[in-house]
Amino acid sequence: MLPYYARFIARFPDVTTLAEASFDEVLTHWQGLGYYRRAKHVHEAAKRVHELHHDQFPPSIDALRALPGVGEYTAGAIASIAFDQAEPAVDGNVLRVVSRLYGITESIAEAKTKAAVTSRVKTWYGDAPPHELTQAIMELGALICVRKPSCEACPLNRHCFAYAHGKTDMIPVKPSRMKQPLEHYVTFVVTHNESIYLEQNPDDGLLANLYACPQVEGKNPHDAFETLKARIPFSVTLGETLGDVTHVFSHKRWKLIVVHVLAGESSDMFYPLEDLPALGKAHRTAIELWEKKLMQ
DNA sequence: AACGCGGGGCA
DNA sequence: TGCCCAGCGTT
Image 1 (cartoon, chains in turn brown, orange, purple):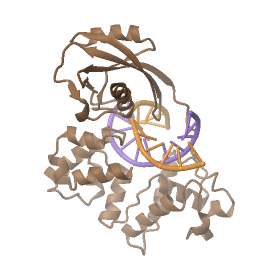
Image 2 (cartoon, protein in one colour):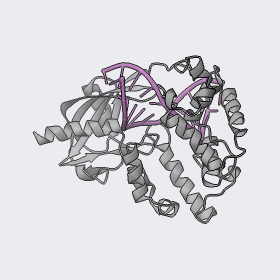
Image 3 (cartoon, helix red, strand yellow):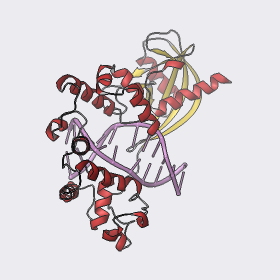
Image 4 (tube, chains in turn cyan, yellow, green):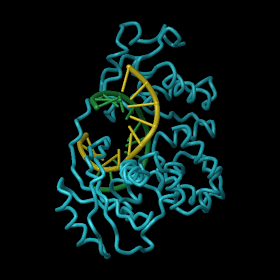
């Protein structure tokens, strides 16, 4: 993740730069990070800080919460770390640290549990500067109190319930994950010379705003091709099957049969291979299958 | 309260 | 290959 972050920051080093960039470019630099609606939120938030707050983040929790994409955790993190206010920032790391420390066995997915942890942490802001305390707890969770924790190295081990009772692998308690349902698609790499036809996804839903190869539900390339023909405003010829791509999201799995299609004409919806707009991982992989064929 | 939202890292 | 990781907005 770090290289992505570095690239993003190198291109958009401050809110002004981000606010003045086009959304398409923000999306391109977000490519590979996932949760593409966050790209929209971070761009909108930058524009608001730029226009409404004269390029300075507002210090109050309420004004921070009003920015798109800024929830309770992020507002707390900014307020305490950047503005030194006694506002807890409870993320997954902090939930893990605190539930182990006190032996909390209610599920950390419960709103009640998170509220209890938040109010507990709030009582810790007394002597220490808020920006240091907040970062110390988060860092403990990120480096020491991880899934398989390094309890011998933990400065809190003498006070820790989970350590004392050998229950670090039982706490935190979280709901088990459901297995993701499998969805089948035929994905078309539609080419004209070395350009690829791409459509832009809608503003909401899966892979929002990302560009995508046309894709039809089903397992049969020939049936899917008939659907594609009806959907596309130019003549196409069915090419060879390039292979499969499987892709796992947090809530579903895709199995894509990737098929090459030759377009009879080009348009401004065709993008040259060396300058593609932002795509999801699965479709980048699909296009690479065609590139490999091209190399041979 | 429940659901939808991605892709990288690691065993 | 399979499993793990999180916080926000919407419904």
